[in-house]
Image 1 (cartoon, rainbow, N blue to C red):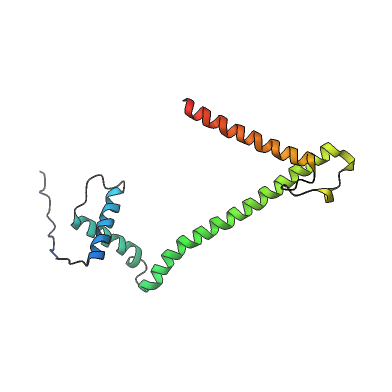
Image 2 (cartoon, helix red, strand yellow):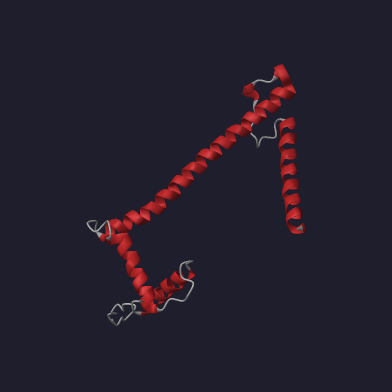
Length: 158
């Protein structure tokens, strides 16, 4: 025996928005409709219910003792903190790449100059004081450009 679906009673509310709030509401609906979970168009009531549930999940469910302004700052800070971590990681990586580049230049000079190479003679990558180093860096730049061009050619040939 199939039980009939129970109908939840819906409470009816009238909402009045200022022009700016109405625009924001329309943007929220459009955002929800872009979500993968919403293959069908949401009506305005469903969008409001979804927004309320989202608010409840973020601000009330397990954090009801935290004031709204503190919780809002916490959520915004989480995003900023993640960006700061990424920026810090990028600085570390850049520093490591710089060190590797100079280590490779040291190897180049040790090979080309042999016993005559003194690490104190190592020049900046951007320096043109050492013609062999400048030639090496220019050739590396050329090879990279060739690889990029070849990659573009291969990409467009398929």
